[in-house]
Length: 345
RNA sequence: CCGCCCUUAGCUCAGACUGGUAGAGCAGUCGACUGUAGAUCGACUUGUCCCCCGUUCAAAUCGGGGAGGGCGGACCA
Figure 1 (cartoon, rainbow, N blue to C red):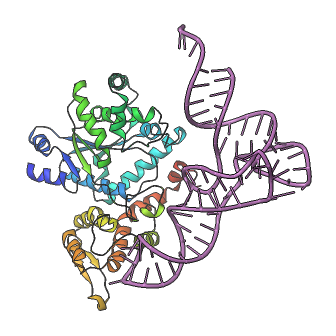
Figure 2 (figure 1 turned 90 degrees about the horizontal axis):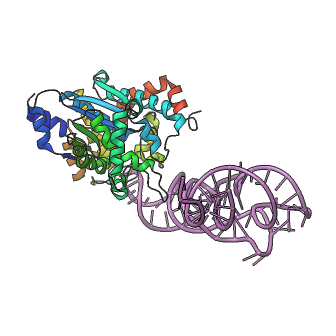
Figure 3 (figure 1 turned 90 degrees about the vertical axis):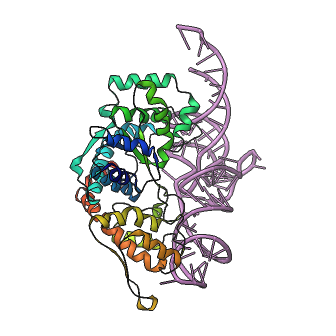
């Protein structure tokens, strides 16, 4: 694979890349590039996580060495989203779920290294860099950097501010050339690009994933159960959520159903050399088969493909894609039970 | 250490002074209309009134104690 192909693979299905030319230079240089993505083990993982996980397959295929950071300390620093006592249980759950998703996406989880934040964030060199950064970062700068990520409140704690600085330092501590994350992380990684050089580190290249729409229009929201598909949802649950999804005929904006197909289902099917089939009554024209997302979208926009026909097909495909993850999690019910004792007792 | 304020539906809050066992908006659920959903109409649901003790025929409401949260003062080590 040449540099152009590797770059294309790395940048496809992304919202923004900073800077593409730096990626090309990285591939041209000697050695194996390293990338990382971090997840703070807070709430239960869902299909939105899965799409970023799916993309890890592209990183691996492009010959990039990958680290997944389970940012346990961050999960607590951000307004104690995860209670201190549950950090370990939630990290264990995240590790298993992430591994299952990577494999369900058709990549080899063995190729990914897992690290927990507390494994290195308490070491002296890291701590020293944190104090140095604290010393010359203003409140407003830290607030601005983290405003899209950290829970905002009238009476914020210091944890949310330190959170931001630490995430910037993580990039360097993990030796990552590339930071991958959702576009909501942009503020923090721009801060990292601005500040890491002051500490003698390289500016990280940033690859941002799009944030998918929720199923009820607007963003996916933890507080709206029906706005997202959970990894443990069975086929019936997926069907009913997709059936209830916001999906105006011909419209692609805020259309979660289309986005799930584009960013998750089609890439996975493509890896399996399979097509996406929409079963449709003869009355409306009979079945349709799609090899790629583009033709499906143009049919949807033109009105050839109606939402009522698309939805059942999408639900079945999504359910099939998440099935291995669901099974893996159901095999070890104690993981969820101890990570979320209040909802899984 | 001291003082003040707050705690009522999933959320934001009213009701407390003048005790009669609870309300609004939003959210949610369900219908109607759409070959899906949304929007729009229409209907409906929701509560350990933070906890304990006391006064009273009767306490979200009054008194005492406690818990949690917030704000301020003092201290300037």
